[in-house]
Image (cartoon, rainbow, N blue to C red; front, top):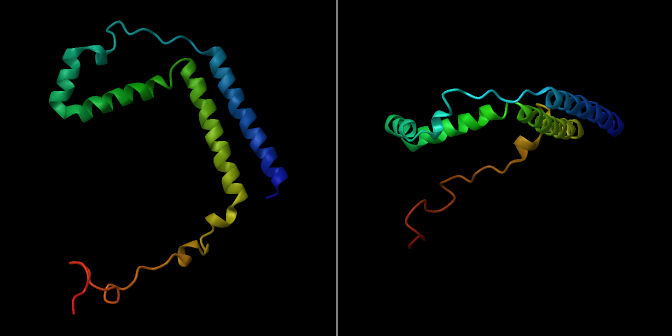
Length: 130
């Protein structure tokens, strides 16, 4: 693929992604307020989470809430824009280096092999004594 073609496809990807992000941003509704509130702000709820699964359970619940917040309201548009940039950069890398993704690529066969354990000297205990 020629560099010019890669550039053209990259521009189209960016225009489509940023256009979708702009459309999402302009039409985003404010997130609805939950009448029961966020349970992660309740000490009792956090205590129950810790009792059932420890601090890892609390961390996972907070991570899940953060991840869900990325897909609500105007944050969704920002998420789409960031994903667009990463996908475009990934496309450009793959398009510029197609030889790295061929099944017969020699990189795997050029790696140095580990030396035989028998010829590498003692495996434990420090230097060899004679």
